[in-house]
Image (cartoon, rainbow, N blue to C red; front, side, top):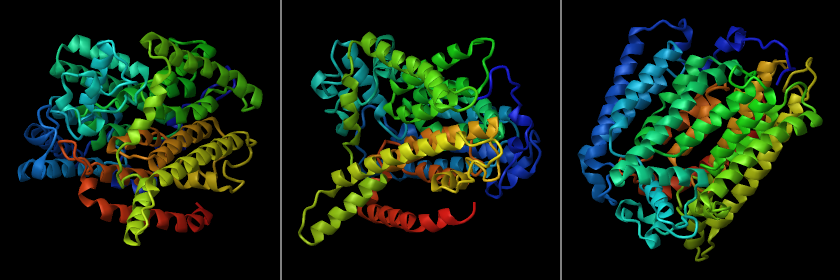
Length: 533
């Protein structure tokens, strides 16, 4: 990102490192490091919420012997879940402008995670799918060619019915990790415990990378660390739910950190650091294919010196070597080849209005039924969403590349194109900022975060834990946080303890509401983007 040998200014000492905006809350007005009575109240309220959720997990969580939940397991479970989620969301939101310090954020988030670490699985039954897919592979089967039911997994009753006959949608690296958990775990409880250990390990690695990424982008580390680690989605779904998204983030964030920081003692050679970053990013893709949308922006972060085509080919090529090498090695090591690519389509088997394209298709189908025309619009709407996503990702990358090539005496958004205006509205870039190393890093990482936002919004399916993907990157780049923190807070209420989705209870009204929201955004976007940021 800078010329070899050039000094790297400490972003923490720059004005933007401590800057905040009006939507951050009163916590931004105090000095970093000062712990107030309000902070202590927030810590204990969040812990109380985590304890309530852990209690709800044993009363009506995703226990292996219970795959259905008539009447939502009774009112007590719902009351505990609602109270616990409200307490955690409220406590997280209260300090969205930043914790007193990074270490305070670490300790508080760790305290909240303790009850969830020993709870029953919460919010999803996916961990049992991981276990069965690992069992299929350990038993000599191909989880990309056969469902866990047909393979005869002994823990089939614990798997959600919708996933019993589908191929594994995860990469070969995670299948290998799942099989290792099965072999070492011995039984279902041991396997689930080891899968949770893997998730927590990934989360810990990601947590260690957050301050460095935030400093590289000129964002307060204490705010970025709090926004990610204290978010209820992380505690409930990545810790208690043991989702492999935590493993993906534990590979993705260190890979990006290697790219935006100068070489250190461990990897003093810049080409070596770029190659290792490529390996980490390739492994992230080999856990969950969603990470692939970050790769084009990672190539921009790999460039040292001026952003020219030759530099992009040189440094992006090194990154590609690491990415492809990781994918090839894990595919060959597993013996499954590229069969995992075919399993990606099975993740769209559910139809829920929480995905905007799916919601639009559902509403069109509802209208069609009213007039006697069965249209089958959901698949069409999903394809349209994916086409729009692909076009947006290409345009976002091209405009980011163009902005990086802007002369140093010009503003990143001086050309006024709508993509950069969108980035400015999101707080990823600032209209008046000249092109600086910190501004470049913030732009690249923020653009990768926006790419993940678009992926989450336009994908055929949305689950609450998907929101943690863009959260991790936006927290370390965006100077405005309410626009992505508020959806994360709302998503925390979507999954009941046993894995049932609240969206199912309001299927038609939810689809209509989401469609109206999509229409409002489409109609308002042009005038909103034209206004000066």
